[in-house]
Length: 127
Image: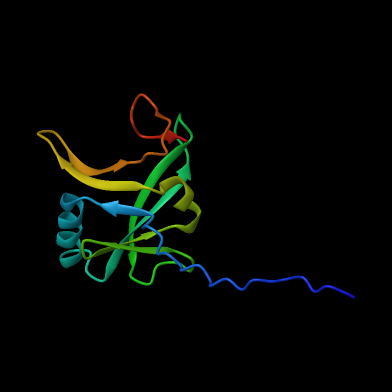
């Protein structure tokens, strides 16, 4: 007599939605809304990471046509969309972009939990 193996059918696990690659602070979202409504209408902010600086990597930001490049990740947070270069995704997972203004400067700032350190001038980072 031959025995057949007993197989159980299990229900497929529900697919959970992944968190976004990065988020925007309210200040960053507000600043981008202003930029998108003004001189950068019809464009989106594209974020990438390049190899440069004394710590090895630097954030690069540029306004590009809304279509972006093939393979770019579209991230929408607080009603604002940015594009992420697919090669930069692993560097940026869990990051938040903030917009800060002080007496001497203003600009976008990355709060990246993957950073292990920055160079002295603050222009580059390493993971």
